[in-house]
Every structure is written in C-alpha cells, then in structure tokens.
Length: 125
Image 1 (cartoon, rainbow, N blue to C red):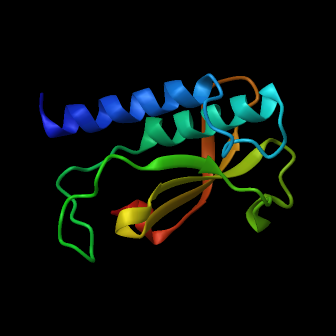
Image 2 (tube, helix red, strand yellow):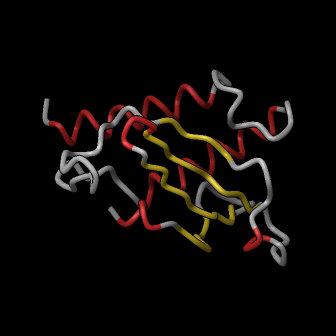
C-alpha cells in the first residue's frame, strides 16, 4: 500500500473514531452536538487538505508522520467574533515533531462543508 494511501486511510479512520466520541478533546461541552461539530470541522479540513507525504518537516527534514491527533479549540477564536454561524478552530497536531496545524472554520448549517477564515503556517506544509 502506498504511503499516501496509508496516510489518507489513517485520516479517515481518525475521523471515524472521533465520530463515535472516542476522544474528549473534541468537546467544549460534554454533548453530542459538540462532538458532531468537531467531526464536521475535521471533515471540512480533510475535504480541502491532504497530508503531503513528500513535504518535509522543517526541523527534521523527514516527512510529517501521519499519527497526529485532531482536536477543537476550547476558546472561540477572535476571527469568529462577528460570525453568526458555527465557527470553530480545529487542530491537527504531531507533538513529536512540534507541528500544530490550525484552521478557523465556519461550518455550513445545511451541509458537510464550510469556509476557512484563518490557518497557521504549519498548514501550508
């Protein structure tokens, strides 16, 4: 199985695990709606971004491992202050590599997509 296929399979599995509530890092409050917001936010990111197995991590000059973890920010981002729709910050972190990708996402109420308001420099790699 190719490295890229393995990376994408891992990301799909990670979203599936989060969908059944296997992690508490998604929830700002302990409720099913918060969990679904986290899954929707990760799904939006995965629709627009893919783990690039050819991009090298700046510190190690090695490909970014695909064993990161997804989470939601606990504090509403400043970029969301004037937004009426559901707006969250979602993270993909690989602590061993000191990588923390961050996206501020406005989620569509009527579908599984959204728009990006902000992203950090790690997402570009």
